[in-house]
Length: 503
Image (cartoon, rainbow, N blue to C red; front, top):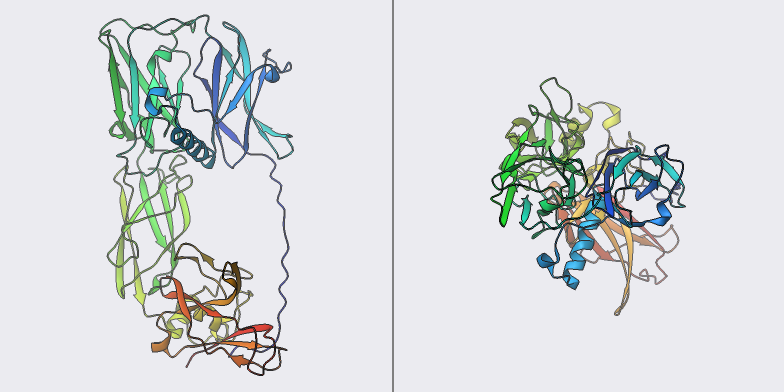
């Protein structure tokens, strides 16, 4: 049984101040006679902002004289969405997706035709102080705007991409003739996974006005992405025009890997406890063994013994993911295939899956059945629970997480943790409950969980109410029991403890 007594846990609130996010990928585009745009990405969430100057030295700032639109969506024509309330809500969703990807697009309007400007992206703190600045970029607005009679439209479609959701990714579309690229955002098109470009907005080679094409000529287009990656770049796609109304369409079939993708998948231990999470280290490397810095997408894990198979991993960051959890449902040696849907590269890893009992738990984490550190009363990681409690709650006895608190989703357990007292107030009154994790097969294993109440930390009384299962994950379930207002004496119930015992 757990020891009687009180334990006091102290929490420190630590505030971390960042020295400034690193800005990369800055570019100027969407240039007209009176406006232009800037896009960039950063390595952490920031407040998007720009500074505009009238001189190459960046000393005379004129930002306040211009109109600044942050996270601008400017590609989709009104005919695609009708300007309805639903379309405005969609735009807000796309803008939120851009921010979540740390990819930013800012439009600057109110400029003078045929005028030189210098602009840079900046990172500000909550008080508006600039923490970091990007490169100073130059741009010259067009001299004039001409009417282009033919319709040149391009729809970039990611809806069939196996790499997942691209909403909020910024696409930079260029061609060899024009001095500035066009920007658009995935989701700012006909559907959630599409981006729309009006190719008549390309400027001519001199940057004076729109590019005019003769009948039969072609545009050799190039792509790159901000806030996402396909592991490669868009191969040249010559879009031909016959001088009339022509639309073009580009899809992910044109995206090819720049480099060889070599996958590795290494489980943290050669054995896995059935129903119990085990972490796998994933990596995507080039032919030289270096992580692919532009590889920021999920891999697919497939095995009939794996929960959720086929399972999409968390997104790799610069080709690395060091804590991907997996759960096996079947005993024995199990093989998992790991695949990159975009390049087709794959690898495998195996794990010997064994029963979840205390001996296997001890072998799994401590390597033997005799060392004192593996005794049920020991607490090698120094957190809130000893080995017995870690075992009973399905936790990792080698990982110190302080006060380990579970996280609950919609009828699902997102993170394992210790017992908690939950107070809920609704129209029916006040509902006070005790919640805790227990193993699903605790009856067969002879494990007992005993909720107890006390008025004074001296007398303890068992709670006889049958626990109700409210969520589950792997080999554990989250259960709930009412917290009575009074003990049988009767006295007011003020304290709670959970007793755990194994044969």
